[in-house]
Length: 287
Image (cartoon, rainbow, N blue to C red; front, side, top):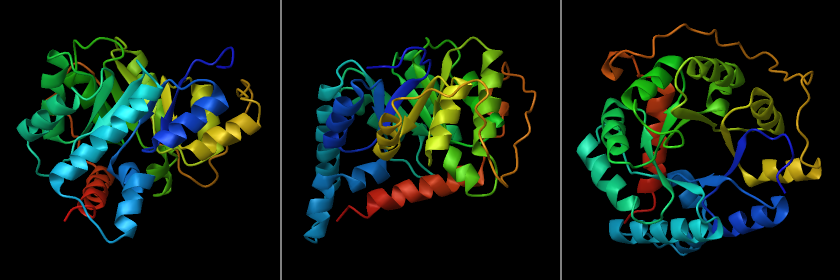
């Protein structure tokens, strides 16, 4: 059962419905689940086919992805499941919108994952107006987060998630947890229509720090949730200290959230690399 005093929603980061069932049995709850092309590629059904030297047509891969998403949603009915569009650096907003509208029919509680590109923001602006829930992914700085806030103005609470990637900032010697703290602070000056879904948590300490900071949501792999269960679903005390080691803290920036979203500089090298990786994982499955 959910620990008393827990203020952060707990999501599983996985493309495997069997793991969803395992975590439900272990925790007694899940608030939602996130998927992406890399996780989809690692799912047992997909790996079994690839191990036989087989690949998918584009139609087959969407059918398999749809089945996995529906299987996950059936285990956590009414809970958010993030479904990611296929998009490279040159994918237009219209192409994303076509995919997003179709994917939104797969289940009743989808958050459509869009990459943080100018076209991704255009697609998000349109989808929010249409009442579709979105999850903006591969976020690495406050300017990107401000752009998401501005592009989705008018959205209802729960309609827009922002997914900042902790571990990939750590990988370049920056303290990813300091960025989570910064974007939470920045958003608290706004109207609350964008919720922070801390992602790319690589360690149990990342997870505990997200709980301590009261991130709106956090998505983590099953191994971290298993470790949480082994520690009796502990919640960090106010004096618990996260140790970033030699990672450099990311300074907070005062930003105006009320500009036109096209005025924010949303380019980031890690976003570009992340898009390339997701596209490569997806394309490796195709005939």
